[in-house]
Image (cartoon, one colour):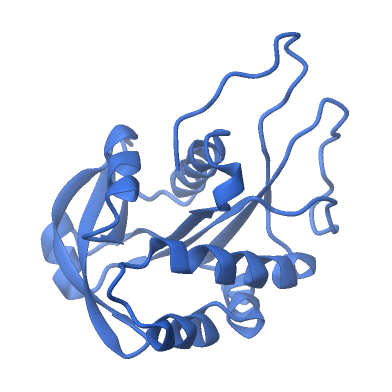
Length: 205
């Protein structure tokens, strides 16, 4: 994920369209997740571990459960256009999605609560991915802005996430957007424990 790029010279270009995902989007979400997750994995991770995680955590069934969870927000990004109209909630949208974000509003696990200094319900940024060909178009920042809006709406004072210790591009992105590294955790991927840095962003009331 990279910072925003400038629009066209005539000013007609628009940024990405960020909408709440609906059941219509589940096949697109699963395809996008299967495409983007391997790109964030460290080189030593086996293909079996990656495919196992995708099958268990990023399937259409998994996204269906997330969309049915009242404490989960899933946002999807598609290319904007000068003629784009405001999408109607719950209706299928045209265009291949370029990115998505998934958050959970819940108390952090005890080991994370110790790092972030609170046991109250906060926002866990579980997933934020952008298709490789869409990097540099401001999609990551637009999705993160949506995540922050959702956190504010839910009354969340903090957003936290974990990213693999070898994923330096993700670390740079989150550090540029105000997150601070607060510790480490272990994360299970396809039955293999990986080491993550934990980042947190404290939001004002």
